[in-house]
Image (cartoon, rainbow, N blue to C red; front, side):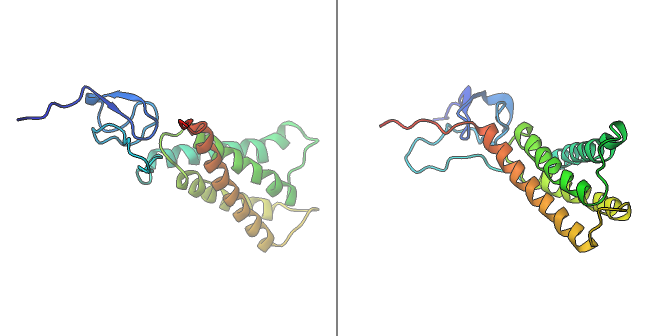
Length: 177
C-alpha cells in the first residue's frame, strides 16, 4: 500500500509548520527538512544544521564588514575631524566593528553561519591593517602588533557570529516536568 505524503512538515530545528511542496528548507529558519516530522524521542538530535558554506551569505558578510569598516574607521574621522582613528586607535575601533558585523550577519542569516562572517572579516582585515600601518604617524605600533590585533578582530567576528546565531535561535524551549 502506498504511503501518503504529508501536507505539512514540521521543521526539526524550530518546529515551524511548512508546506510539503515548499522544498527541503524551512520557511522560518532555513534549516534542512527531509519531509519527516520532527523527532519526538528523548535524546533526539536538536539544533540547526549548518548546510555547508554559503557563497551568498559570504558575499553579504563581506559587503557588510567592508561597509562598516570603511564607514567607521575611515569615514567617521573624515566627517568628524575631532576623531582621529589613525594607527593603533584605528585597529582598536575596527575590532568591535568586526564583532558587530559578525553579530549582525549571525542574526539575519538562515541556518548557522559562522564561517562566512569570519572569513569575510579576515579578508577585510588585511587591507585595513595595511592601511592603518602605512598611515600611522604619532600612535605607532610594529606591524606584528597590527597583524595580531587584526586576528583578534577576526576572532571577535567569530564570537559575534555565534552570539548572533544564539540571539536568532531565541530561548530554549521549556521542558515538561
